[in-house]
Length: 141
Image (cartoon, rainbow, N blue to C red; front, side, top):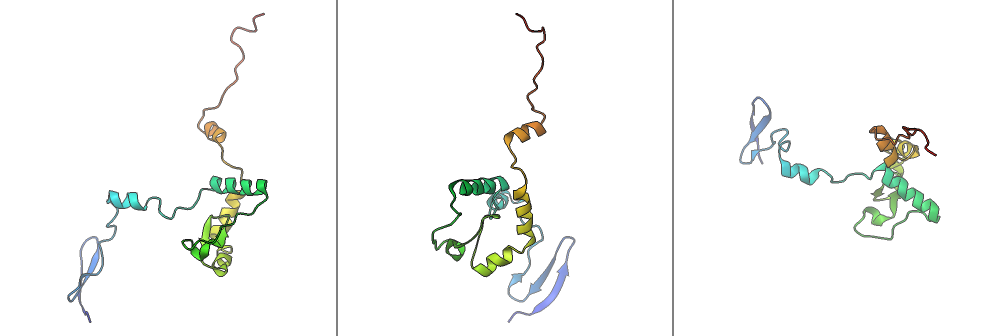
């Protein structure tokens, strides 16, 4: 058994001293300046982008096949409970049904109904449109 003997606080954080175990709480924001930690966690568990999901849905409608997965032990639920709109696997049907009632799922569906963002739209937004100007000296015949 460890007993809480006293609580000390400094300017930025509180820590508790317990008998025989050392600090029980880390300083808040301990990883904020750790570049190695940021590089490791930057893309972990990142959701698919909407344009990637729109591409998958277009391909499945063109081929006429639904997006399915073969049984795979490494995926949650063996890969059998997959949400196409958010691109996530779930452990069971109850988890998938609960996800389809969530705010995240509904927002994602709304985003997928919007027009796909293309390179032409990006060029237009950046002011890189192709202007068609009339000839400077008229048509020479």
